[in-house]
Length: 204
Image 1 (cartoon, rainbow, N blue to C red):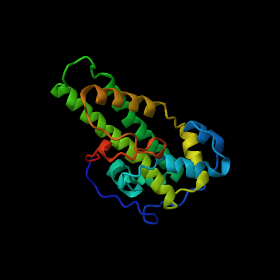
Image 2: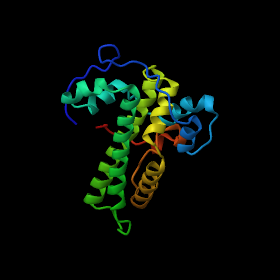
Image 3: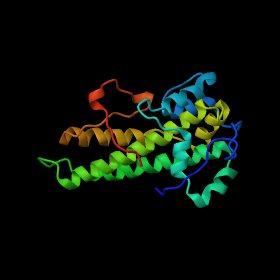
């Protein structure tokens, strides 16, 4: 991504806590694979998106994600729409990771340089996707988007976990076949306490 400086700290960037209404609260929970009482859906969604191993903030992700020539258009978006844009970018990273991992042959005795490079690139894309979603949790915790706005954004975008599940199945298959280390999905829905399975590396 491009190097640039973007002020995304609230008043100067035009960000206000969103109060968008819309979507069924129960539906947001169902999209994450579990039924959640209506009053707790937003907190559950934020917790599911949060990666406890990541220090990602909404500001840092926006700074990397929004090109300099698109800042004015970004500021014109509602916070709900901004969250939807970040969700879309995360899904794109996941889809690209799935495409790469799906092409890795599992019938080799040892991993080739090409296999290792493909796995590393897929892990980079995976980190980006998880970081983007974790930044949404940070935005919610900071009050940039309220409970109704977060639920509406997830519902309006149509977020699903299918691609994440496919991604994780492929990561596990490739890693186990060739002895690659990785950290299971960082969101609290699929968290791990095993430090030896933690993947490290620079995001972006």
